[in-house]
Image 1: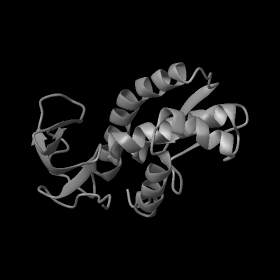
Image 2: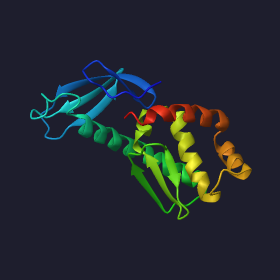
Image 3: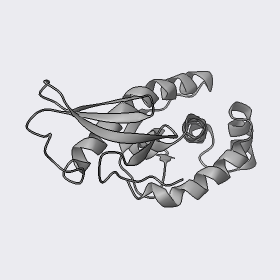
Image 4: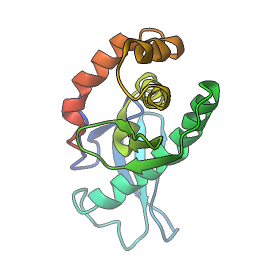
Length: 171
């Protein structure tokens, strides 16, 4: 499973774990937007942008994917926080290299926008893992017990996620 950035229409990209073909289409709106469905991720572009190559569209496309991730995953994050009865001081989104998330001693959670490529099982695991650090700022046995309580099979998922980390830097 690799996260690849598209170079042309018809190339594939991972979006919430699914491999979707990308395409560009014209919109009469002034701002670009993305729509996923039926095996396709469509980037709708205003007339002024329709002739740009996928490489020229890299930054706006990744920004739109990040916006999608924030809108979809943020409510899930707060639901998990409530379920786990923890109170993060803040949630911040980043375009990181090297990690899916982090938790500071001030209880601020940072999440990687690249999670948009991951299957939901892994996204839920990352959310629970980082929220568990509010209670345990380490990877002690108590930390892993808390994660396992909410995500059964968490060690298997953690190994799977670590294998995927190598290709997260590609996006």
